[in-house]
Image (cartoon, rainbow, N blue to C red):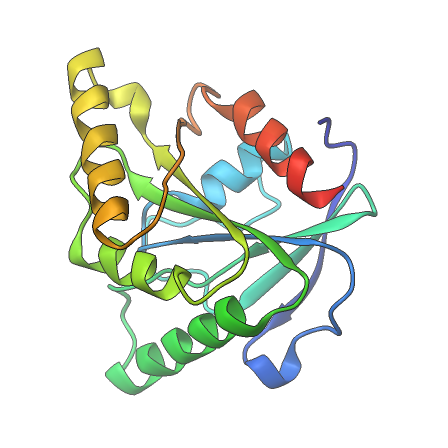
Length: 195
């Protein structure tokens, strides 16, 4: 699949403010600072479509990007660390959980996991949330350019094992926003589920 156009359409701070369901949606979810916005920018060949920051928790709303005038990428707020109150963080997590569990037009959930580490408790929390969805699920392992071949294999196995422990079959695509690895494989998977 080729991405020809990508435009920011809207930010929705709550479930009540989501656009009406319609075109297929691909959600990007992960803990704060895992590299969601950077990888999303790499997938659409744009440097700054999704805002990136060295400060965790930059994405605070569900950001909808219209792709090829046919479907949406939805950048979800990062799970976990962010300099906000516990109350605000809990509200984000309720919104994310509600979106994942109930969104009719959600076709694919791409869970970004930092390839340098085993799945964290927050990653396991995300996997538990994803079990509530009827959408297809896959893991994009970020920052894989920083790993040796042995580390990559070990960390992929850890993600697959964690998924099985949750009753999930977990396809894993090794990615890097820096060198573009995994981009074509990720776009092929996306293309299968937005047609």
